[in-house]
Image (cartoon, rainbow, N blue to C red; front, side, top):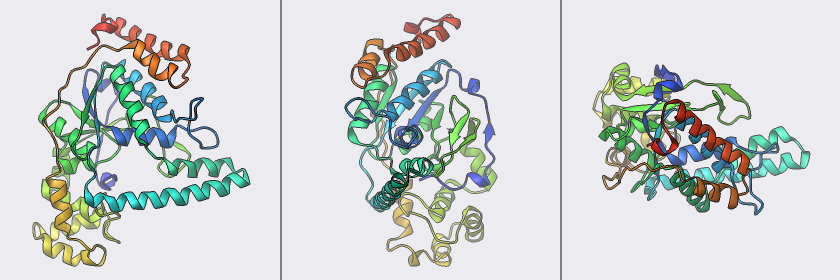
Length: 343
């Protein structure tokens, strides 16, 4: 969803080198959707193999992760589990938006307007079960950890960092702070560029770190109030938030009412926008299901399995895949480590 408070925060800009040897817990669906949205052909269609199966997500995952591995980073990929009931409304909204975008794409296709085709195609991204399984296979082959969340992957990633089993949550969204993630890394790209949301152009970006303790200190609120702030501006469980209330106005309401949330939501006119209680959303976020039942063990890269997944199953160029793996091995040699000792 993307907690809309980043414009009232001051992130710390860092270099990729600052994350050398760090462990990052990944909101995997968030990352895969980034790849599906941005890695497209000239007309906006997905990259596919000879059987028509989508490979955009695998291209992004392999290129991004192997490059970041040259900095000795390790990853824990958290996958979504059961979808909260309150999120169904958001899923329906996204489905409708994708249907509308598909119509716009067809119109642009008839006009042979490549720019419009690419713009609307990016809005039709869907992460199918077979794509998720392909991603898991590749992640395993690269030696990284997979954790299945009982519910939201981002909540599980946040919990893993909170426990001290990882250094940062890797995500473009600030939602993780509602789940008490201590530290977030954004804009972690190799190219230094990121596709603008809803557009077909790219912007220069630099990795950023935001810490929960600094968020709370800067905004002068506590953890519960941060969740309230998120609910006011909108979450996946109350889509769009309350009309007319942005981050600054929401913060003002919190300062005014402190912890008297009933009065706060009465003034904000919650009942005019939602037919359920704000408490339902608050309790869901605060008590989101997470698990301790995971094992973190990083393995050696299985080169043969990487080749099987990408080259044999999905028609990637064997030469390019091998070159990427060789580059990774060379980077480890420079640090006086062999590829087998990477972990």
